[in-house]
Image 1 (tube, rainbow, N blue to C red):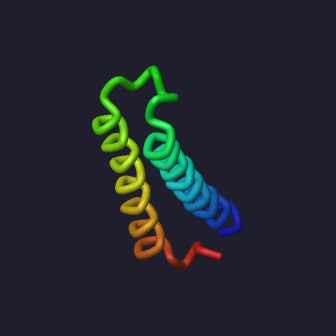
Image 2: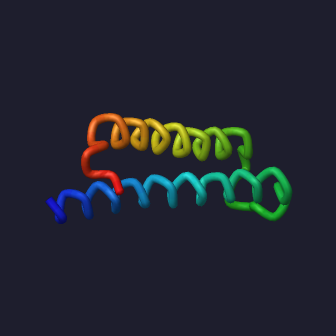
Length: 72
């Protein structure tokens, strides 16, 4: 049971970390668009980061609803 709890906890932490990184990336793109030379299409790049946020929020919902018995 402890191993299952650890795995679910790690998955939840991973989702939170990916959401935070994507949010920071969006903030950088919004505040310093000229400093991001690798991304000529800023709108598309931001949409990609929003997809990362959405995907990980969905994963969190699944983890919290389907595996709540293993959540701390």
